[in-house]
Image 1 (cartoon, rainbow, N blue to C red):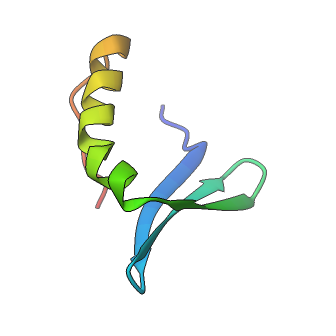
Image 2 (cartoon, rainbow, N blue to C red):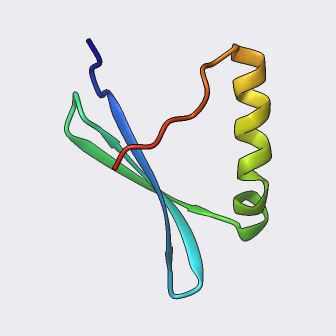
Image 3 (tube, helix red, strand yellow):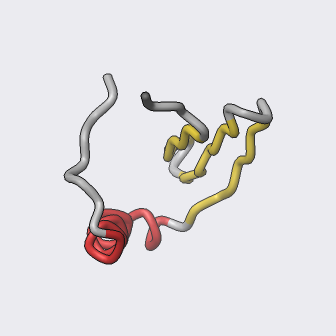
Length: 62
């Protein structure tokens, strides 16, 4: 059984990016600005992280 603990979204608003992370268990939200250079590197970061952790292929939630 799957239990959602955190939900994260990367949002662009008025040309700036922010990471919105919701802690489902504690019912809290944290918002952090993210530089565009970090956004551009996100796919690479996720690939490296997945390789190091040996994670399963990504799956989408729709």
